[in-house]
Image 1 (tube, rainbow, N blue to C red):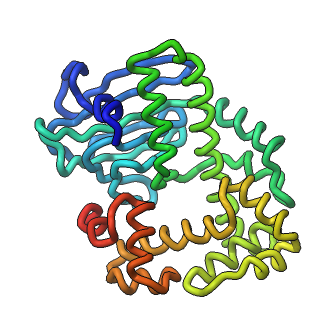
Image 2: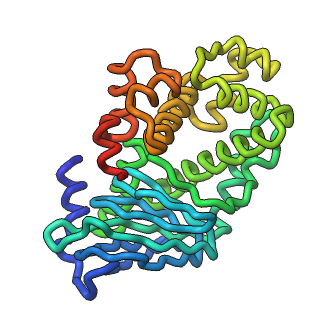
Length: 304
């Protein structure tokens, strides 16, 4: 992490009014940024979302409890998005005065998501699926975000907290980019849900269903093209519109996410590697570390 990022995360300069969820608030461009520092262990601290709430972990560990028996560790370089009216309760198992747990939230209005959806409908249409970008999220969105997203978050925070000559440009473009990344995650989730319900609904749901069913097997691009009745170039364009990546990059991402789920369910590193479609343990370990920021064994220690 760059030194400027470390300076942003440091609690120095933020007044301490309370030891649990000490909030420092900033506002600009119709968006509220809040940085929360917690200096002691605590359980079941309630968080209510009045708007669309984007949460990003900076340091430490939280455990989230939500609707539908939702229960998950929340770690640095992860994003958690709540819809208006959502509620979660939060545990802080590691927070201390010397090593506080720190996270940020960005509050967006639903209208801002609608505007981004409309732009995606025009600029990144999906064949046979005109309404996926209008999907109204009803579930939490909990993802491991990329280093690019982490850098974007830090740049946004820097513009809020310190300001510079480019502050307005950074916030205008940066917040729109963050919304775009959120909507792509929602779009993928919406199509995956549709694929589970009716795999033949659209060309892309057929492709996504085949990928999910065969993560443990080799998957050929030609097979996906036949399922979608698309040329290779058209299939690549559709995945670029949907997830901003190639089909093979998407498959790799899904295999890593499957491996993480298998590890959390109690499988060994070797079992999770093979059952998620990786054939080489060393390669799997390298890819897992790049994606999640820790090797599989370290990840298990962190989430348990």
